[in-house]
Image (tube, rainbow, N blue to C red; front, side):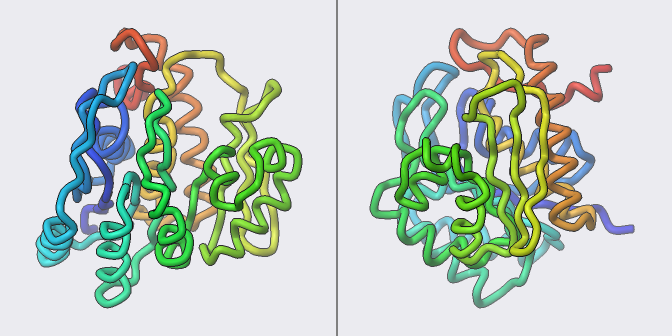
Length: 267
């Protein structure tokens, strides 16, 4: 059997907890070979993002052409696509070259609060990239921005929010519940017909850096292994829950530390 390969298109996190680094760790932990296309370089640690350098869209395009010229990619995950021009570059490539399951993590704000998506790029994300997605994975604040409603409205009307997110064009939606309240962190999976609850205990920890990247990459890894979107999302939910639960064994930085991607291998 050929080795399953997943591709991440995202920004680099110099502290190693999120972005490209978290994606590749997730792929490796789930026995999938990871390839990467870098869209931006960030100078960040567990406490802050100090600076961002966006790569030229032309170089993003060259990376894509070079990777696909050689590797048999089975799934794609997109993360930090901070500028409209970069989103358009990615979209144009996939429209004309490939039909692959794409997991869109609509990265907008870092864990420390810095903006990672330019405001003018939001509409391009909604109208150009999301319609190509097999799965989108917004958290509650991201869903609020995409739907132009309050986070409280998303939280109190999650089923309705799922349906409105689906109407943006993705084949399926996973509305994440990590920013919600209560003892359960409940994600909702919607495929246009049925809403499926993906619950897990809410874990109290400051080691939450890269959780969104890791979850979306876990979905992409399982899609690369041939799982359908619901099964991939369910397995990804189990993985991220255990990675967060085991994060206390890591002592990294003095802010929001990373999750433990390799909890299974250590045990």
